[in-house]
Amino acid sequence: MERMQISKVFTLMESGPVVLVTTNDGKKNNIMTISWTMVIDFTPKFAITTGSWNYSFFALYKSKECVISIPTVDLLDKVVGVGTCSGADTDKFEKFGLTPVKGQHVGSPLIKECLANIECKVIDFIEKYNIVVLEGLAGYIDNSRKEKRTIHAIGNGTFIVDGRKLNRREMMFSKLPNGI
Amino acid sequence: MERMQISKVFTLMESGPVVLVTTNDGKKNNIMTISWTMVIDFTPKFAITTGSWNYSFFALYKSKECVISIPTVDLLDKVVGVGTCSGADTDKFEKFGLTPVKGQHVGSPLIKECLANIECKVIDFIEKYNIVVLEGLAGYIDNSRKEKRTIHAIGNGTFIVDGRKLNRREMMFSKLPNGI
Image (cartoon, rainbow over all chains, first blue to last red):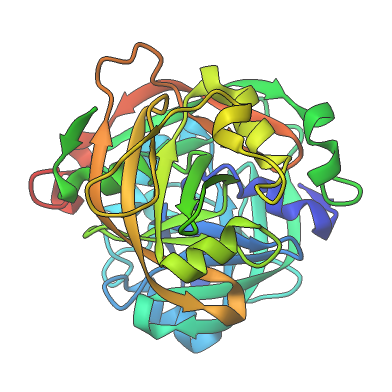
């Protein structure tokens, strides 16, 4: 995985892919599947919606760290599997054959099999709406990976796979952050 | 456009499409293009990130209402156009040939040409992070429309079009809200 410029990390999230969020509670690693996410700043900052209904939330709350890992369509069944069992009684890395990789900034692991990983620290909990505010510390992308199509949850058990890409850079030139 | 069950409206937004947000400041309609959005509750509630850098923000702040309109790929150039000019000096409905349609709950217009529209009231401003919290009041979908593929912004001036759909309803049965 290659390190990305931090100013470009928001581009991993802006399109709204389903993500895996890893945590470590001081004893063990865990993973949850999340599709309620939003970029809130280019620096980058992200909002995710989660709460005590997710076992991972306690580790997130305690450690104030996580990694956002971005899976691709070849990993869809693992992503759904991770989202439909609990870290309370399951080692999800083992069960789904995912490989934790030590990061440089946080105790939560990167996931080797994912297209991209973002090490994050929690900078705020907006408890009224179960919104967790994250700041990305470092981003990594596996450019050697052939499959780069991410997946988007509809919320009814079906998923949209990335289709073709369309370029409107010229039209948008005035609105793009410097260097993006 | 057909009315949707309110419990299903979150499924329009969960996959992270680029949306148009319409407002009315009491005098005129306006539209902005937004890709920083997140579902935060099934009821439905949405978070969007916007602020005083968008001219529409003042109408949103004043009226506490908006409509989220969901465009499809055939509208991409209008979507980018809407996002790269300002309502301060432009009637965007006129300039981009979009048709405002009167809603039932709010003074902001639906957009006839879009795949779906969600009438929303603003229930909170989280000023520290420029997050606006919306509650969806009614959702509408144009099922007669042939083009249903939405678009996802990468943030660098390129866009991903919806590709194929994959069904994992059976695997996810335990996690789907009632009736979804």
